[in-house]
Image (cartoon, rainbow, N blue to C red):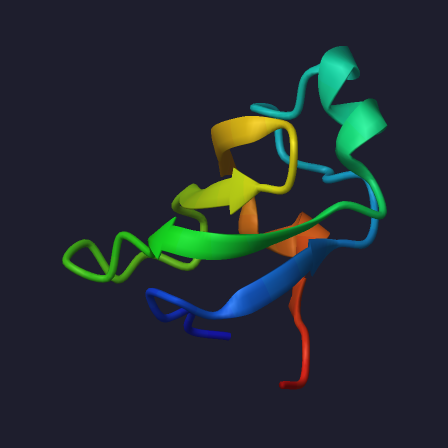
Length: 70
């Protein structure tokens, strides 16, 4: 899936990516907005920058994200 800037997303599961850190487990179930989808690289394994509600902005693997319907 290709993420776009401004999309509302949810961290719905733990990522299998090696960049996933234990502290990120606390983000599961959190909603946020994509701030940098990294589309210039267009790499499905690239990290996506997401601004999470009350948790700051983080670069997260794509396999833990799902787009929320408006």
